[in-house]
Image 1 (cartoon, rainbow, N blue to C red):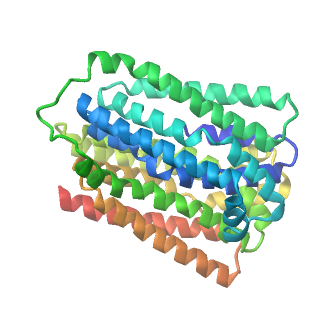
Image 2: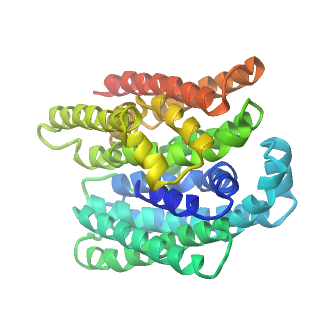
Length: 406
């Protein structure tokens, strides 16, 4: 899934109005869509942890349907009403030339939340019953659909934001359809009617487990629009906003192994020898992914990627090259966040996760506000520095809470 961002960025950067389209997606349409999606992102972890029999499966599925409908309605209200002007124009302070393409991209992404909720719920069942390979196949289909749609839409002469968001939406819908097909044999042959070893899932127990978990991505994703709003008010906003999409795509790819590690920990923590093996693997992931990012950011690979592959304009390329140097710790701490967070989810002690994210949000918002007041640095440099400090502190808090539960 991490390859989606670089692929999308490479394609859109090759089209006309490079800076406007990258900024409209990466700093307007996508962050807003992600915040709306926030409450259902952790359905993957919840489904992996809870869907052990038909009773729990049906109850989690019922929540997924209700949340998808409510959040899709919220997405529509933002994308198709004057509420968008309030959020993007007044609150985020998006430059005027990004407002219209940002709104159009957000409108095209309307199916995003429901499709993501549906496939993450089903992917959790696949992981729980040892069919993680199906998740990989679904992601392959998503990327193939994305690329095919980008090529087809580009031939229509549509703008970059239309081409890009149509491809993103088509990819996630295709992946959701595949997930339903792939999970069929598991539901028919492996999912037991009841699991006597597990406590029954009811509304109270589910909400007690899930609400703190849901706050994790919701609060974290809120920082995306906050970062865009801050960069809009700091020096070199016209470069920081499009650069953010490029840098985020590359860093997300490096962090993707760490993100996926969360569900592995949830599913495997109670196995013999799991603590030692998973901790060792977290170190391997951390060292490998951060080293790869440093290799990209500090060697001629950087110029090849940003100049030859993405074909960025020289001023935008220079900002992205410097910004990448500020991100070197992000993949490393992501691996350990997943290690500690997975332990807490496995033990159904999710309150510590919310506390860690709250700490991150407070540090990030405070740092962004100080950076705006100071006004001495290019926005993306200040934002990444603040996010990295917040992420490290979040990881340390998760470690403390996880150690208390061992």
